[in-house]
Each structure stands twice: as structure tokens, then as C-alpha cells.
Image (cartoon, rainbow, N blue to C red):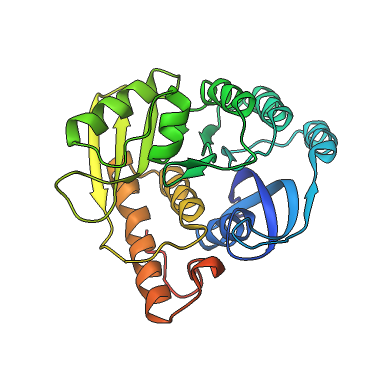
Amino acid sequence: MLFKAQRVAAIHDLSGFGRSSLTVVIPLFSKMNIQVCPLPTALLSTHGAFENGTYLDLTDQMIPIMDHWDRLGLKFDAIYSGFLGSASQIDIVIDFIKRFSKNRPLVVVDPVMGDGGKIYSIIDSGIIDKMVKLVKNADIITPNTTEAAALLKRDYSPELSVDEAKDLLKELSLLGPNIVVLTSIHFKDGKGRYTGAYDKLSGEYFFDQCEYIPQDYSGTGDAFTTLLIGSLLKGYNLKQSLSHSLGFIESSLKFTYSMGIDPNDGINLEKPEINF
């Protein structure tokens, strides 16, 4: 019997050094027996936390790649977009979703625009407005609290109550997606960071947390969303998928921290097993 792996189109940048974006997405999907078809948006020597890196914009290659895949009749079980460096790239992704949605793939948008209350320098108001349009085409979005504030055009709050987090999740769902997963939540009466999820169709909210690790590592968000998609594609529900994803992240963070790995190198992906 011929084995047919599930297939994901991953629209992200590619960094030569530092685990982030495609260098996180590809190996993790492969560990879950899911085929990755990368559509690179840019080629970098390192990810953005390193200074004086090279950056090659691949916008002019995205449409020819998309056209070729269309001629081949490729179908995807999921379409997953991450960092997009311009409004024109976001337009291309919106077109990609329209062209490759005949078989109703799961569309997941991680609206990578900032963190820790700060928007990245490359992100301007035009990109934010376009990102809102992209989010309307998604089944699931996975913003952090900084990106959530940008999408909703509201002030960033470093700490939230549970009710405030629920309101934020619900308001984000009104932008279009059926499922919103909000990361990097700091609760006013809790230690560490939480992740919350809201299913608009069922009206259910879920909150979960990794064991607190006193260090941030590049690529953690990319890893989390990749694992979430993989778990959902394997047929687990939202609550289970949230737990699975955070369980791997916790194991990876613990190992990475214990080894004294430079945070800019990113979390270790090779050591922990994926047990779902």
C-alpha cells in the first residue's frame, strides 16, 4: 500500500543560522510524518536577533513558485503563513489561499509582527492593515498579545485578567477566524506565561501553561504553531492539541535551558520526542 503523507504549504522566511521560521517548521513537521512544501519569503544569513545579517527579499519568486504549484495541481492539507515582510507579500498569501483552497485545507496564520509590547521596525501601518485582511481568510490565528493589540488597534496591556483575555480572544475571532490561539499571556495573579484558545463555533475557552523557564528562545512561537497544526491534522481536538504542543515546548525549553544554549540559537528541536 502506498503511504501518502499529509502535506503542508509553509510560507515563511529561511535563516541560515538560528532556529526560527522554516528551520523550525520543516524538521518538526517531518518528525510528525507531515510533508512540508516551503514557500520562502526571504533568505537571511541569520534571524533578526543577530546584528548585521544579510537579507534577500524573495517576493519576486513567490508568484512563479505559486504558479508552478498550481499547474502541477498540488493540494495541501494545511496552509501555514508566518513572518511576511511587506504588504505585497501578504497580498500574495491571500491569493495563494484562494487558489489552493478547493479541497478546504486548514488555513493557519501566525501574524508575526512584534513581541513584548513592541512592533518590529520593519512592520508599518500598511502591513498591519493588510494582516487584518489576511486574518479574515484564516481558520486559525496564533498571535501573541503584542500582535493581538496591533490587529485590534488597541493599546498593549502587559498583564491581563482571565476575563480580559477571554474578551481579547473573542474580539480577535470577530476578525474572521473560527479559532484564536493567544500566546504570551501574563495573568495579573499568575506566574509565567499562559496560552489561551477560543473556539468560536462551540463558544469554548481553554487556557494552558508550560512550566516557567526564566529565558526566552528564538523560534518558540514557530515551533508551537507547527506542533498545534500537526496535532490538529492528526485528528486531535483543540484542547488536546494545545496540551500536546505546550508539552513538547516545555520539554524542549527545559533541555535547552539546562544545556546553557544561547537564546538566539533557538530551542533544541532534536532531543525531545513528539509523543502524539
